[in-house]
Image (cartoon, rainbow, N blue to C red; front, side, top):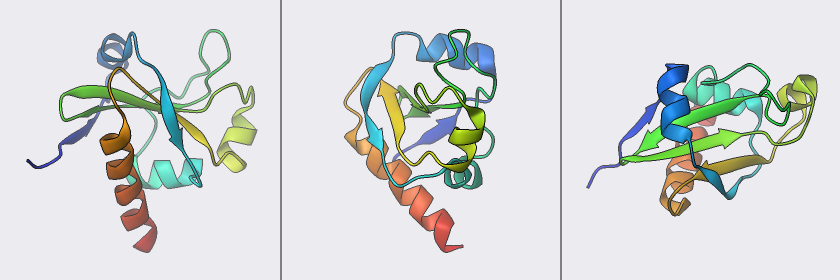
Length: 111
């Protein structure tokens, strides 16, 4: 079966889909620019109402919703320029999603 990955671009759809997700794992050695160059702008680029998340990408991967987000950096500047450990949220096992994301980022870095 071929993996399918779609980034949510409409915040209202992403908000509905990501409701109930929680921390499943981490994405290491990855910068904001790596994510931006590979997937485009974040789905959410406004600071969350509780200020705990600065940027978040929301994806559908093989029918399941996953998120990649910073957590409690409390600084857009830090997230943009220094952060290399991102949280992965979801409702299901995240390993296949994480592997797929890492492969896409590695390919993007080689271009």
